[in-house]
Length: 144
Image (cartoon, rainbow, N blue to C red; front, side):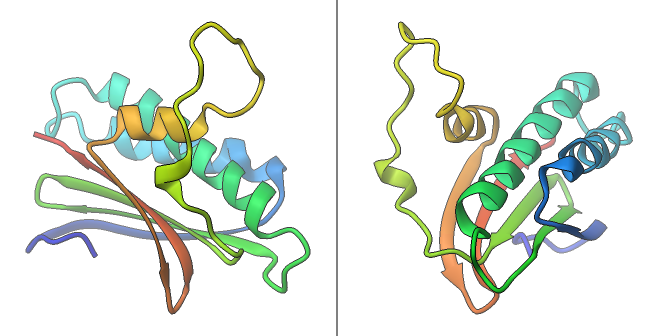
């Protein structure tokens, strides 16, 4: 859990590692943000940002870490504790060095390669690490 005392929401989502579930997962994240109208100054912007970062994170988990593995699901944990929104996306691949992922070149318009940049830009804190439950991308946003 995120380091806080009062749990307001704790949602555990497990979906098949298929891209057809991306819209559903993004919509769930978006609706959670919209419900925070009293917790953050701009819930509509948070809803859009949360949809984007969750969709990007789950896309990466599907494309890079579940291919050929024994796991056929992606797990997403969303929690709100006090004024912290915490999203964790678990994958079961070999992992990667997030610090080695460069920012995209603004002069090149590529179809791919901007997901980690968006996640880093839109969230307050981002960490990727190995755990007993697989690798986890943890994204945090302060709500107030």
